[in-house]
Length: 529
Image (cartoon, rainbow, N blue to C red; front, side, top):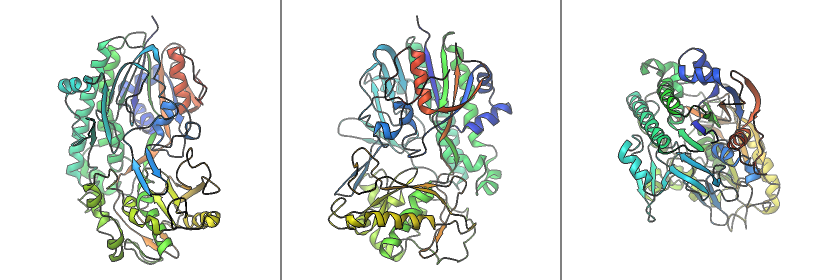
């Protein structure tokens, strides 16, 4: 009988923290595994780093190959932008859809709905780290039975029931400045870790699966919420002493202890993978893409400011730490009198169940038709859509001016600086298409993508002509990074070996190789030797 393959995802665990804390003896189970296993950092793709991080692993290829750009859709001609709770898998199925060749169990893979071709069980959406969680299982009653035995995830308190009977879960991201709430979230995440472990054990005991993949999402949530209480960040020195412990480490130590229980119950011949296709770092994305860029493009398009801000060259107010409300409420109060007339409020968007009601970039929707270019809501790069007449709506810029507008935006973005340091905040502007009519289906709907610098976590920006934007409170102190890791233990993986140059699709190819199945042609990776 072939050896079973078990893959445990530690979602968005930063490899630098893993390496440091295992070396310091703070994670004994993971430290032992690293001595017994091959270890490598793995590189994911930098574009759509948040939306596509798991899709890269599941497809085993880049978005340029899969032609799938995350879980958002833009409808040309109507300015309609929607967010789905799961990937479409419109060209390729996830790699574990192996048909009758293997018995498979998957548990809580992020942004994944039920797919055909899985000979086994799928338990999805118990509690993954996304804004919307689609709760499904196959067989259909399996999720209900698992929840009856182990309980609901303690963090997700909002449940929306669709007409088709499916459930979508969400939770309100807490205020980073409210220590009592953060401590409560820490405790809920630790409880969820133990529930999740019990559910994985439950699946392991059902049968000897050829392949089992289960994901711990709690370290991902903790990375977003607690980075400033653990690692370097503008808020660290002020807020870390109030915490009493390192909340991020607390979560990971709970996982580390539970991994020992899981490993003890695995068959002796198990080929084991622990991995994450991406990591975490101080957040240099959220404020730039969700607030600064939308406001900058609005000022550039209209000559008006939707949010208050000083003229360029003014003093930047010092950091505040007295915020207690949700981030969207604090930011909404910074709107100008003009902004009050053109922005759609988060309350209005929440009332119509818009899952992006918390995103300031989404509040500009009614203004998109009158802007020269606008930012599409997203979680990583700044996604800029040029408002082209005849493509996006009846009005907008002349298609003949598309190239000139793109060049003007590139110059505009290059001039944005952090007013506290004078450093530019953009690393690069990527041109997606050269004409407005080029590959509108299989490319990103963005015409330009702004890649931000990873080493700046500014709370305000400044443009020499359009003035200062901010300062505003921080939203999530930890943000997505492209580098993850893989720990591989089993025959053929040399204990203690460290390997360089591994990509996320290499991990996909390696798992398939260990399962003894063919590697499809679209997979970009090669098995790790």
